[in-house]
Image 1 (tube, rainbow, N blue to C red):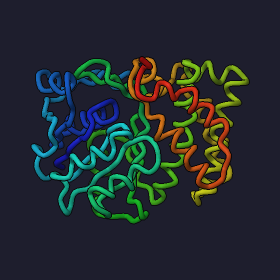
Image 2: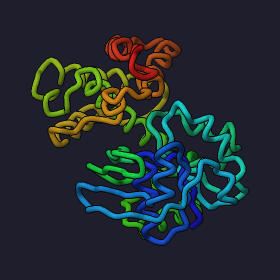
Image 3: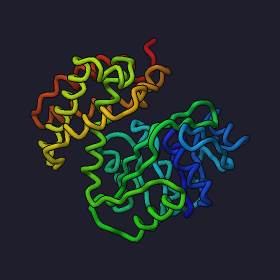
Length: 306
């Protein structure tokens, strides 16, 4: 497949490199020093579970230069979603699929509003990977993708995407309930991101202290209440399932929000906690714990204050 990876950060860089290593025609869209390093030396993956490898540096800062493509993996931070969707317009043809692998819920509608309805698939990436240095992605955990058509249909293009992912050694699952899957991940990542960023501690510390573990659960419970009010059927055991998942994480596990906070980068705060607060206000559902996390992190939303 001809693939454009829009956003060659941790998620896009890791999955794109695996696809490129498997022989797919992958173009990475990056910028700045990261782009120059990929062009000069290739994209290096340093994986805690898979070892280290380099793929050739087919990279650009202009998606249009890639030409018409079969698949766009849209992996930018949520605050760049609309701009990224506009940037890929020239490579999105009638048969192009755009698969969002982003945090939060609602990105798919934003993308579809730009590239047109029917071209967008939803996806949940279960992976922890970050840019360690220009041209270098550090992968420490996970690597599975669950994706699907937004209307739940099984289509030839979704089977083609799954085949490409599996050829690259990426565990991939097509789901007819991708909206619920996105919400399930939203519950987990919002609690995990909020608590690790707020406390500046990994999950092992958070779950060892009754008060912080309780706060983690309260976030999940508030989000589950929002999902129910929004008509998303997550099932009666969702909160317990997510807490069980949190209890099984390695003790040093943090989050991309924690990583961005301690490195003074812009935060995905609005797509996670901010979105929940606004939805709660719209639906008349109180979200006091989510608001507390949001308010405490708000000074860092656009990067380190000052």
